[in-house]
Image 1: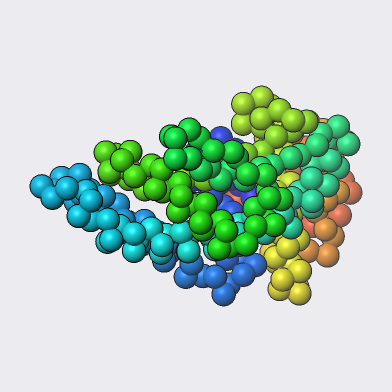
Image 2: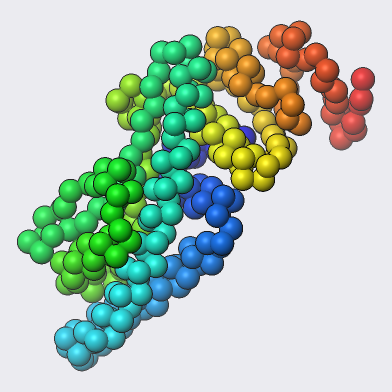
Length: 272
C-alpha cells in the first residue's frame, strides 16, 4: 500500500477496473490473456466504427463484419465481467470486516459492480446487482451485452467508440450507504483502501499457501490515533512487513517490538 493506491477512490473508473483485474489475475493466473484479448477486440471494433463513420459506403454494408466483432466482444467481455464479480464477491466480506475493525465498528462498507446496458428505445437499462450478475450464466450476460450494442449502434458509429462492455464498467464503494468518493473524509478513504488491500493480501496468501511480503508506505498518514491502532492490530505478526515513515513518533512501543529499524539520511542507510 502507498498513497498512490488512493486513486482507487479518487481516480476514474479505469483505476478501479485495473485494480480489480490485477486481483483477478493474481488469484486466477489462467485468465492472464483474457484482458489483453478483450482490449484487442475493442481496438479492432473501434477501428471498424471509425471506418464506417468516415467511409462512403452505407453503414448497413458493414453489418456482417460488425456482427463478428460484436459476438467476440460479448463472449470475451462476459467472461471478464464474471471473473471480476466473482473475485469481488469473495474479497468484499473480508474488506467489510477490516473496515469495521479499523473504524472501531462504526463504519460499514458496501460496493457495487456497475454493468450498464441500454434498451432498444435508447433508455438506460437497469444497473444489475452484484448477486444478479453472479447468478447469471456467461451466455445470458453476453446476450444482454449484444442487445445493448445493437441499441447503441448509431451512437457508436457517430462517436467511433464501443460504448458497452467491461471497459466502460465501474466499481463504486460506499461507507454507511454514502458514496466513499463524494462524502468520505481523507482518513475514511485511506481506511477503506487499506481494508481492500489487506483483504486482497489475505486472498493472495490463501492462493499461495504462504504469506506474501507486505509493503506499507507512510501508512499512518491521515489516520487518527484510534484508526492507527486498529490498523496495526490487523497487520499479522507472522508476516514480513516493511513500513516506511518520516518519523516514529506515532508508533507505539508494542508495534516496534521485534522490528528492525533502518534510517535513511542523505542517501545512506543507518541501521540501529
